[in-house]
Length: 61
Image (cartoon, rainbow, N blue to C red; front, side, top):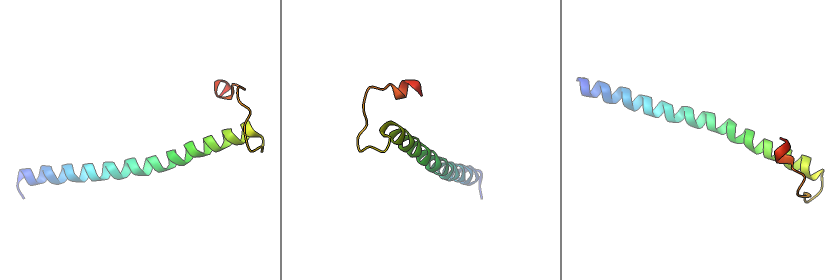
């Protein structure tokens, strides 16, 4: 293995594993954001089909 192959292998491994880490972190954050939205909708709507608007919920949060 020459020096260029060594550098390419290290760089390729780094890029691949960094991409895997980003995907692994992104999935829980996506679920977290969806749940926050769900909780806000449930709070805002109080079990109703539609929310009443203008209650400044997002400002309060």
